[in-house]
Length: 112
Length: 116
Image (cartoon, rainbow over all chains, first blue to last red; front, side, top):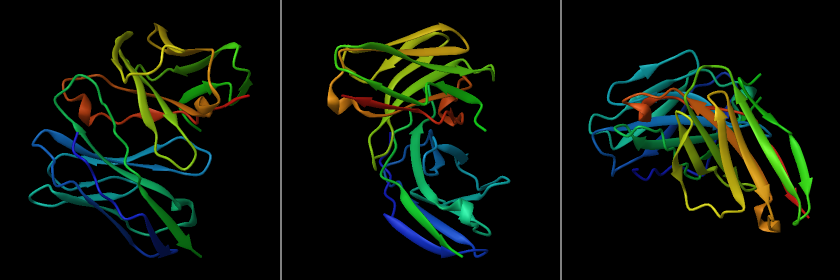
């Protein structure tokens, strides 16, 4: 699995957009990019994933660089509930099991 | 509310005790996982089951013994644990497919285990 690098922490104001960056310079052609988040006292929660194209869902958008060496998770309007640790994970797409190797993640603080 | 249910939520046990953690899902997922998470650290994969067969054991000590008795249930049997095994134990499940790397995992809220 490719190693990912994220900032340790980021801050945002409520109702403003948040762009969480992730570098995965050693990613291979079949590695997916996943984002999970973990709120205090809860298990990780799936946010979004993609392979090559940008992806949107009800929670967020994922922008993947053309060379796939970096990606950005976009929360369009941050709420206080979005305060969490955000993990960017790159894992092998061709295997028969989804092994997730979590990095240290980015602690997102949202100010009212 | 999570679709992966883990019991118990909290467990305190002595080093000589035998206990089991239970995980249940009814989403029809055929891959199930155990992770261990120490305080302020990211989760670390322990075991992966695919179609009720053990696919990955990440060099976990034998005092942790996983079991997948059916497609909905995953157990983690604990015996002779050490204080450093105190952690949050997370269970997850996902679909199985050719591109399993692209399948989202659904996590439970974990069992917080304390070893005295």
